[in-house]
Length: 117
Image (cartoon, rainbow, N blue to C red; front, side, top):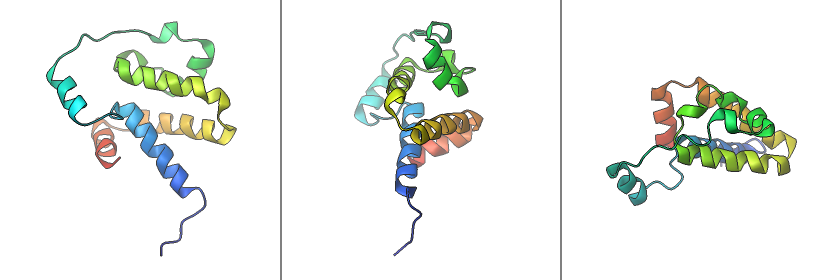
């Protein structure tokens, strides 16, 4: 039996969730394949300048790339930002830290993270 540190499973789950959210693959599968086959117009809403102060503060690690993110990914992240007020402080800090880590990954590293989670 492998010994794990307390909270390791939660940390792994949070990492996987962040990767899935940022990758926009939470609903991957047939729907994703169909969506990829049918181009849809890219909505630029909401752009960074339209976010509230609290949203900008929470999503700050993504400020530089926000306007280039797919709409579905933005919506998921806005949902997380909305729930952040009810998150315990350590969880909120962990999510923000993972967002910052994600922005530092190369495109190849992001693809690898998406495949692994």
